[in-house]
Length: 68
Image (cartoon, rainbow, N blue to C red; front, top):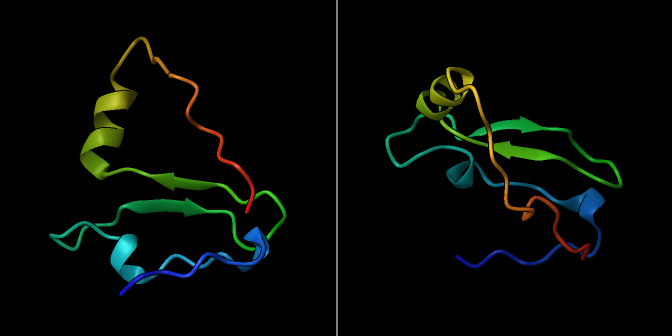
């Protein structure tokens, strides 16, 4: 089933199948809800544990997306 692009990000809804891993573990850890600039955080508990134990974090600048 393909997802239709929302006309506005305020109408963005993440289906449950994209908020969990194939094993059923939570993957969508944070959803700020309907607002003009929504924030979604995807990760697993294991990855959050790993990053919490790291002294250095690196990012590549791909954290922003274009508005619909």
